[in-house]
Length: 428
Image 1 (tube, helix red, strand yellow):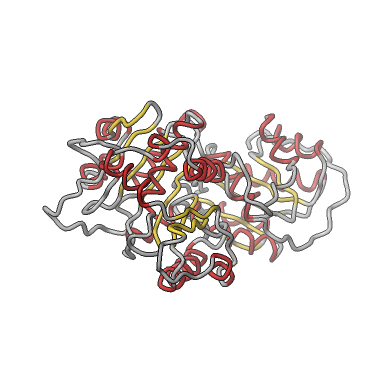
Image 2: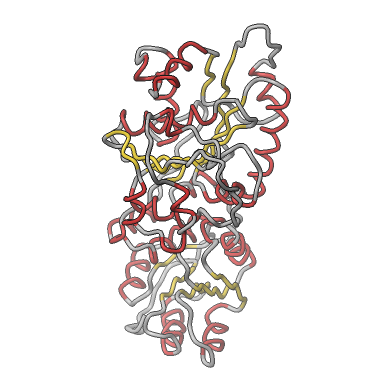
């Protein structure tokens, strides 16, 4: 912002009001890289929004500090301190007064520092004028977390590195409920039905079944990646991936007990980040256990899917998972739910309606108990759609794939409203 010059900006300020956050707007925002952000706010509302945004999982790598005082406080602060990667300033000033204050701020800013202004003037002329003067973005108060994080992402996520893929994590409410089988079939459905590249990562290193279900026996896989996490890059990951189909690659588990698999909480983060840069979808099969690293993987994922059977232990565990993930991911939608193995002979079951009544989550679909179909697929190393493409269960996997990729909506959900500011950013 080195070319600020005096020019009046005339319009009436928008009244300050409280914004109710629509978390669905956060779904498409990509993780923010390791940058330093400092904000100088004049209102409690903007300050609070920035504080909440700084606590979101997508901002986990960024170092954010929120101050009070607006542009004058920023000028005083940076007169004797180095400037960060990004400065966010809130101001109620208009016209020449705003330009003058921003000009003073430019004098104490490093050349590489980006500046975002939060103002009160809702006018496209003002927006274009400030952008032309070197401001990276102009937001009109009141702002939401989606406004803040999408702006930071637009500034610092390098488009030359390609769009980051989405990570979808599957976990079972209880061992044996079929989460892995569903995970593998959904990965197959996404890759085959939509011809999107998919990386399937089997994180159950001791007992993983993806290699068997997909009829693969790769010599290397997820173990080599996690034990070399500090040097995982695109080249190494490509070498470790097993090609299962034209658009499906597998990062297989060793499925051996030669060692114990105890990892630090963030052990898989680098692997997931590298995989995201190489494929539109990264499907993660998370073992049914609660450790630091499984908790971190579920927190890291863009979408979480819980598979449950209609019995009491599954209900308890599903509720615990939904509640805990709500704490870990407060700005994300609730996990998706799939009800599996419905109609097991002679097994007392909780009705699906009763099962979900206390969860406030409707299942994407219910999958009936079909041991012959699933057993045949497992023994032959095939997916359900390969064994019987006309079976209704095969259609269920395609429907799950549609929902998770955003190509179809769960009944009752609404698309986010039209966003003029987002459209303006795309046209720049």
